[in-house]
Length: 208
Image (cartoon, rainbow, N blue to C red; front, side):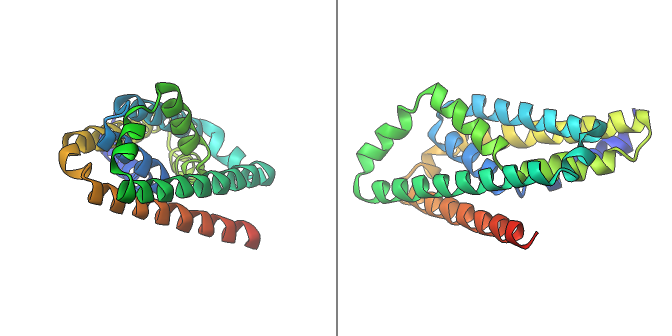
């Protein structure tokens, strides 16, 4: 297995995964709350790894050529992003006025709720498909068999390092990041990011 190809896959994998705002914001928030954050990181990693492998080993071209599927993914992603943005804004308001209630609500969130939200923020995010399946898939698909395996390993490794890194890092810094004012700022920034991404997706869909 070529170490150069592994490093190339690792670097490209990070460049695709890091900018996915909705997914990363969710992992960060769960890490701050220490609310099943390891499970969240694990699910994000598994989903990303499966999508990367699907793209690298042949699925990227299929998704890119299916306009109906891309439209469904895009509109579903817009709806989810706006819903999540509304929830973040509501929570930011509660942190400001009802600090204790917001803290209890965050702590008491069930594992089932967290798992479903993680799957939604991952699988209803069109950027996940476009970046991992289409972009990484088109690059990896051009390589020979042995190089393709090394490239896939590198991109999957990048996903592993990133998601566990931000989940565990946020949990470690939780005493600072979980302060009411900081939490409020993070929630507002997350909501703004979600709305902006939803706007870009909707604009792109209307122009297509």
